[in-house]
Length: 223
Image (cartoon, rainbow, N blue to C red; front, side, top):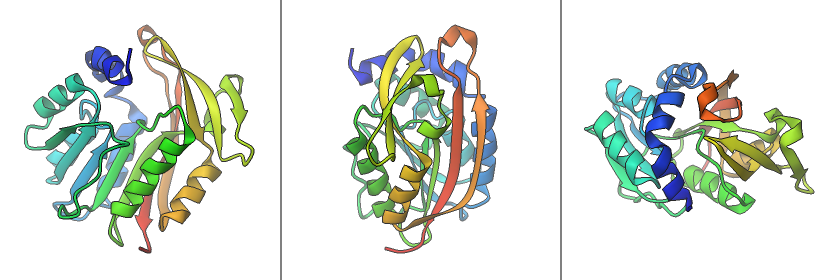
């Protein structure tokens, strides 16, 4: 089963289980205070758009989202009818230079089997943002994960190979350490201006690991 097929198969259950995550909801409230009026926002790995894109649209912001799953795109179009949504792998998506962009969001959606794809995504997002633009992320970091699930760190300690149980499926992902994130942000001219963390325990029926989440807002300081 491909990644797209997997997320297509769980779209409804995912929205039911994860849309009321109090950590995400608190982070959205925090991020909204940093956005300029009528901001142009881009949600990478938007899923069903619930709750982030719904909240952005309700606050008067322009919403564009990218997701690999047809059923997720179908649901987000229903949830946010005035948004623009693209069916595409977020790693291959390239934001048009002619489209304004004030903030990029990625909420618990940066999961790749190799380190390079994670790094490419963050570098792209930083490159697309103008000076003063915001990168708002909710990530699972190797530092915060169950130590028993960590297979090994890279030699530089910036990423680790981690076993993750999600919606009844065992996966292997390369998760960044917080230091790894800090290095990527600095390289992209981004500086963390606010952060928070919190634990979300999914419903038992999801057969998923609990999620210790690191949330941050980073501002583009230099081009």
